[in-house]
Length: 254
Image (cartoon, rainbow, N blue to C red):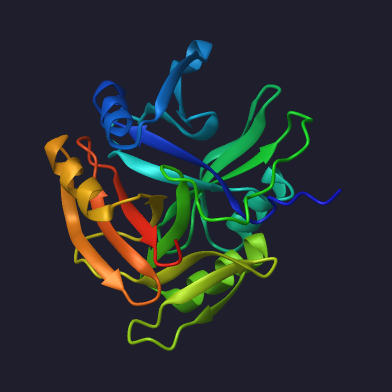
């Protein structure tokens, strides 16, 4: 049976400078349920659930690294994907590593400097494919690459994951990523000075204005206030109290 998750974003990981401050923020904002796991020498790892749906995890960032969300893509093989990354001029930040009985993962960086993860399920359990319906509130629903070179990034990710893409006809020339004919994310030119290339994850919210206001109440920051895009939806870009950025989104189709 073909894995329905191949080429799609299947995991999100918050690498934060302060897990104790970050987790309560997301619990209050989205109602996520944390569950701490003891990883032995690797320390603690906090799983984050929306109801019974695992939405991601949180761990302490490496010393000197800023807080950030890391988006993971599922390839056919973690090792082969990493080899392709190196061949195409990217960098490997964490080499292929097993979490026994669960996943094999790696962390890499594209040639422009945006970090991302690759992860392969090695649990032996049947894969659970993505839902075709509207995103569940409080779950990740879109990924957006902000880059210094759309053309080069398009070729890189196309070669690593088999993605296709097309530049939009709008003024921003917004690129849409596709995997197996399905839209999975977007790409645009960097808009803010002194901000390096990065992936920005979007989380589904029932009321973007209210959630954006709550971010500030909970000690976070608003980087881009709420904005409507005709026939697409409403979004804002925010930052948790430890500095990790993400976007809030409500589709115009729901």
